[in-house]
Every structure is written in C-alpha cells, then in structure tokens.
Image (cartoon, rainbow, N blue to C red; front, side, top):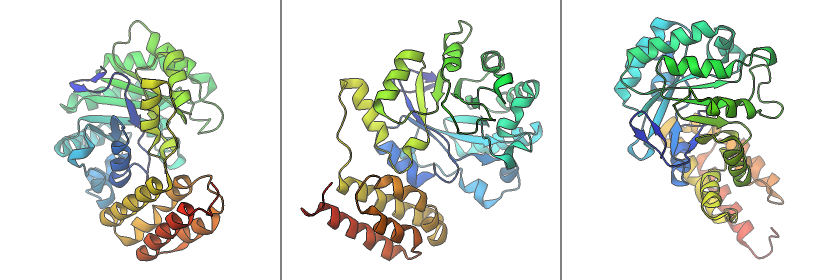
Length: 331
C-alpha cells in the first residue's frame, strides 16, 4: 500500500491530475465513481487566495465523497505561499500540493509553475517554507526540467525530499516541450530507482490506455500513475486500468447509456456548482470525448457546444441516447 504521510492509498494508486477548468467537483465526482484513488483540485493561485478572490476560494470546495484529495497551489513568493498554506489547511484536504509544472506563459513569467525550474535553489527554499508552515503532508508536481539542458530532476527530487515533501509527481516533459513530443519516463524511473528516495514517486504523461499504464508500471517501477488529458470526457479510464491490472483483460467501452448518464450528471453538477453561464461553457470541452468515435456525432456535438440553454442541452443528450440506442444506428 502506498502512503503519502498518513494518507493510505491503493497498492498502485491512480491519481487524477490537477487541470485548470477540468478537475472541478463535478468532474472529480465522476472520476471517483470510476475508481480514481486520489484527486487534486484545479490549481489555485496563492495571490487569489490571499485576496479572497471568489474564483480561487471556490476551488477549495471539497465534498466528503471526494476524499482523499489534494489542493494544489501555485505562486512564487514565500510569504504568499505560507499564508496560502494556512488558508488551505482550514479547508482540510488530505494533502497540499505545490505546482512546479504548469508551462503556461502567464504563470511561468511570474516564476511560478514551471517557471521556477530556472532557479532550483529558489524552488527548494520555497518548498521548505511551505512544509514548515502547514501540518498537511506537502507534495510536489513538476517536470523534468526547464529544457533539454536542465533535466536535473534526479537531484531536484532528492533535495525536495530532504526539505520534507511526502511524495512527488513528475511529468515526463520539460517546460520547453509543453505537451508536445513523447514523455520521457526514463528519468522518472531514475528518480524512483535512486536508493536515496524514500517517498512515493508518481509518473505522469501519455498514459491513455490500460495497456500503457501496465507497461509503464512494469517498465519504470513507479509507485502509481497520474492521469490528465486522457480522463477528460472519459472518466472510465480509471476503472479500465484497474480491471486490466487485476485481470489482464480489457473491459468493453462504456455503453451509450453510460456515456449519456455521465454527461447528464456532469452537466447537472456543473450548473449547480458554477451557475448557468459557466456551467454550460466549461462543459463544452468534455462532450467530444464523451462520444468520441460515434458515427454521425458531429450534428449532435455542434448543438451541444453552441447552445446556451441547459434544458435544450439535456434534451439533446437524450436525443443522442435514443439515436444511438436504436437498431438503425451502426456503431
């Protein structure tokens, strides 16, 4: 069994990656139902938390059925990070995670996220300050380095462990790569196989099938995997991986009823949690994956991503169910 501090997880835990405008409570609920072992919030701006900005504070919403869960924060100033850690502690997540991996320019230009990979000493100092400012287990999500010339992750992981982090998740790309090219898991394996490392090491990047999850588990020896983009609109990936690990067999893909039910639940919770405008808009990225590969789906998808009327969206989903459940639909 893998442990992060006092938090016990599965023998080979599957983690939901923190994703902005994706890993919110409505989506996390679906992933949890499908077997995700631990989830993270969308990343939260420490400056937003300190200023009590509504969007940042709302991201601290945690529901009992989601646990164990980690709140992920990003920032570059020690005082702000320490203050934010105290605020996060009041929300009572199981884990506080620091984002050192986000490659987005508006984050990086402030030396937050992956921006801090250009100054490892500052990264270590910032991490140590956060660890000392909270009773929560502190974890880190990061990348291999800033670019191909600065892949110092083996040394970085050691140093972060030395200042007290309880687990590390590593995306197998540099900041310069963004999300392009193939993730390099060989360096993640070097971190895991380093005899000095005693904390869990989770791998992230390109896990998009049960076969790949098991292949990477066996080849690289990581303690678990973190799944991001492959889960968007497809929370079933967690149950599929777990079943494959246990039996060596692939589950059949979710039925049209399961897909429509999930999309309806997701939409309903999004409307409830975010309100009508945002609830409708932020669901749009999910529909394509919910019904990916269905012939003739384009006409339904167009309606789903253009309508602003929740009632019409629910009706469209039901029309989609009826159409693909009929004997005339060739799947």
